[in-house]
Length: 251
Image (tube, rainbow, N blue to C red; front, side, top):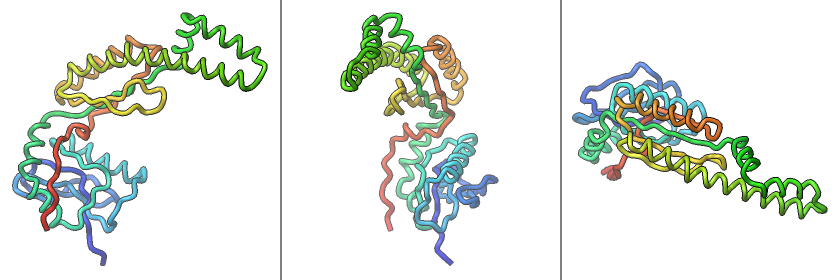
């Protein structure tokens, strides 16, 4: 029989051994490995690595979402596998004070994400209404004498679109970020997702203020309707706001 490893979903403050009523990756039982007031939430696995399939990622996410409803959670990224239960206990022992301190710092807080995308029709409308250069470019494209000339004109038109998008990012998206930052404990800018993404940000907020935060997002969305599209995701485990470097396990 192969040796069982332990897939780790996250760390919670829990002194008692618990077996949860929701399944983990591969439909395995989810339970705790405890050390004093701390517990790692795990499930058994015979695999040294877990493939990031949609099914596995979904199972990982479902477990963390369930834990977040009951606990303050220090989430582990997808794919963390310990060799055995002893390694998990040593992880808790060697990092006990830091893990407990970070759990207390993040107590009562959740992460939410906001992505803001520009609307193509709104950009085109603004260009057509305010930029005579675009009209001239369109006329030139229709009468261009060679593919090279068409390509050059299209490139120039693309730069005009880019200028509008940059303006919107500075004028609108950064304003959205600043307003929501005031309602959050911490905020972080993330890398854009695709060419239409004006804002990709994470916010650490008090769980009790999520309704207030969402109302502000809805208000901003309504105010910029037609220009930008808002995508709100949450509540999430505070992946982007855990500031802890784990000490290596001592064998």
